[in-house]
Structure formats: C-alpha cells, structure tokens
Length: 484
Image 1 (tube, rainbow, N blue to C red):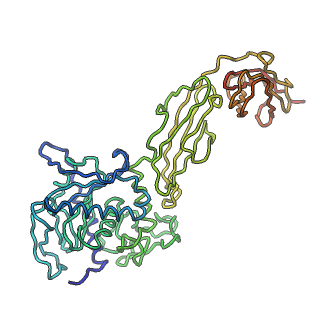
Image 2: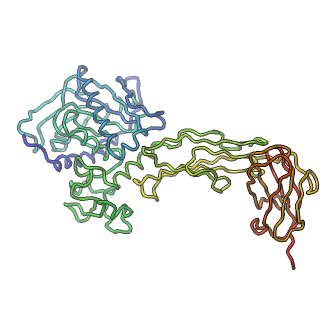
Image 3: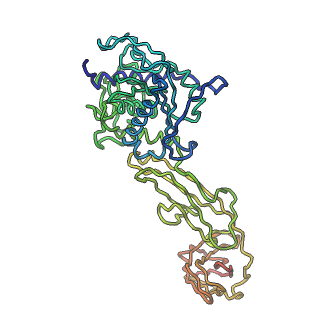
C-alpha cells in the first residue's frame, strides 16, 4: 500500500474543515434519556468555569479497548501541549476523556471513495458515533456521522466543555475538522493530524493549500485582499516567512505562507505567526487572566481613618509569563511595574471618591500590539474628611510662611506620632483639589516642607493647605499674591 502524501491528507482535511454545516445542530438539553459515560479529568489546571475545557471522546473502542483509547488520547494531548502556542498556554486548559464504548471495534469503511486503497476491505462495525472513512468520496476524510449522539453524550457527561474531539479506533491514516473534529488514534501521524484539525475547529483556521472554490471564505489565514496595507495580517508581513501568497489553485485568494511553512498546510511544521495569533486570541475569549482579586468590593469601598489598603490580583500566567500589570490611582501611575499587589496609604487618597485601576495586558509577541488583550478592573474608594482639622494656620502647630506668598512658601507643622507616610494637599476655597504630594516618613515633633507655587500651578487667590499623617490632619489658610 502506498503511503498517502501530506497534500492528499490535507485535501481531505480541508473538505472536513467545511463540515460545519453538519454541526449547525443545536446542542440538545440533557434529558432523562441521555446516557452519561465515565469521565476522566486527567489534566486539571484550575476551575472549569475559567479554563478551556477540552474533551476527547472515544469511538470504535469496545469496553475492553477503552484503556487503549486512554493511551491514544493522552498521547495526543501530550503532543498538543508540546506545540506552540498551546504549549505556552497549557495552564489555560483542562482536559478530559469520556469513555464511550462501542459494540464492535474499528471504523466504518464503505469503500465508496475513488481513492480507497485496494487492499483495504469493506468494514461495517457497529460503533457509537458511526465514524466513517470515505466521507465526501475522500477516503481519508474520517467523520463521526452521529453528531446527535455526540450532543447528548456531551450534555450528559461534560456539559461545560469548550471543544470536543473524537478519537477513532484504527491504525489507518485520516481525520476531519468541523465542530466535532476527529482523527484516527492508532496511526503514526495521529498527533499531527489532531493538532491540525484543532486549528480548523478551535481557531477557525483555513487550510493553506487550495481545496477548491467551494471552501474559499474569509478566515484569519485566508483572504481575498492582497493589499499590503489593508490585508488582515499586514502587521506580520516581512516577519519570518509571512507574505501574501496566492493559493496554487486560485489567484483570487491568498494565504500568509507557501511551500509547506505552516501546520495548516503540511504536517510536522509549526503554526505560522498568523495562525498562532488566532489561536491565542481564541484562548483569551474563553479564559480570564485575572483569576481572583482582593478586595472583592469594587464599588463604594470605604477607606479607614488611617493606615493603608492593600489591593491584590491573582493572575493566570502563560509560560513564559507575558502579562504586564499597570496600576493607576486617580489616573496617575502608582506602584512598581508589573506588581501583582499595591499598597495605598490612606493619606494619599483625596477626600471623596477615588479610583484605583489595574490594567493587565498579555504582551506576548505572538499577538500584534494592537490586538493584545487587556483586562481592566477599577475600585472606587471613598475617603471621609478626618475630624482633627485645625481651622487656621496659627493653630495646632501648623504655620505657613511667607503668607501671602509670591513664588514659594514653607509649611511647618507638628506631628504627634512617627508616620510612615505623609501627604500635603492644596484645595481652593470651593474644595477642588489642585495639588498633592507625598512627603515620605514623618518624625515625631516638628516637620517642614517647602513648596513652589509654579509647581503647584496656583493663581492668585486663597487656598487651604493640609498636612496629613497617620495620626492627624492639620489645615491652614494661605494667600497667593503676585507682584504688580
């Protein structure tokens, strides 16, 4: 028997990738008659509500052969997560096996396709999903025909699945894409076929070889637009092997690679940059990189009278980690770059409503900068005015001089306690904050800070200047007067 060429296999796969019409069936609700089969959750990386839940279903494996199915599916899974970009995002996935026994072993082969090997006989085993060769008159197009049964099995056994994959029990070469992709489990190329078919089904990728005009459609890696400026993968042009190449069978449709440079064209190749980006973006549509936060109260969080508030993120990170974190307090950057927690001294909050925003971006080079997913969380923090306010500058140990001030002035004040942080604030007589500055550690006794009127952007007028430490808040009135 001649070994099938890669092109002939992928031609079959391309036909399979368009079986989506078959999979338009609406997922049935689980009913009392729906049969549940043993489910094995063997790769658990976190809560199923925030992971991509990949499920392998067996077909053509009898009860005594389900251990073989487990080996085949686990080996496929190992190969998948050794392949970029699935490798980098492995922890974003959970994987399960559903052990569905068939009455008889094998895969249907009606021998109706013109390219059937002469040595392969007609085979008609009774299998649960009726997976068959020769679909669409292409021998290697292996398709599970009973999508209705797949629907009910998934609804009964793993209703929270995101992607299902059928493993068919034969050593013959074959597979297909579509909503429920499939591959044979016992062939030496099964791993590569499975990964390619997931490219179709999971990320909606096209084949990067020509399979006929009936399969020409706009997809992440297929387009009718050859304009180098407006083409959908223009960012990647000239990076590595990416270009705008006509399909060998059509000058009207284009692909990002040629000559077997992408797994969507040839087995054993990596995904090209365009396809890898599409896969990572699909993962991000199903998984939130922010797994947990503290505090959990985002609206109307009330600040204590003094001290600090700690805010934390728990992140789900690719490997290597490509997440960046930025914190903004009232619109101004705060804390260290990429810190997963920040500490906010209460005295650094303005009286009234404050906002603290955390921005998390997946800055992976596999996604063009304009497409990099950004996740944003904002807390609203309310701070009430301290009660220990001194009404004028001559009381409570706080003095401002010169007063009126023309260019600069100093604030001298007493602190009754050692304080890790202090802050000076200037507001106008209507209460609008005009200037704030952190002062750092404060000692017990007399402290002094020099301020510049130009730096504070203060026009002529009257203002309230406040000094806040961990133990007190003192306020004095000052005037700004310009020389005539």
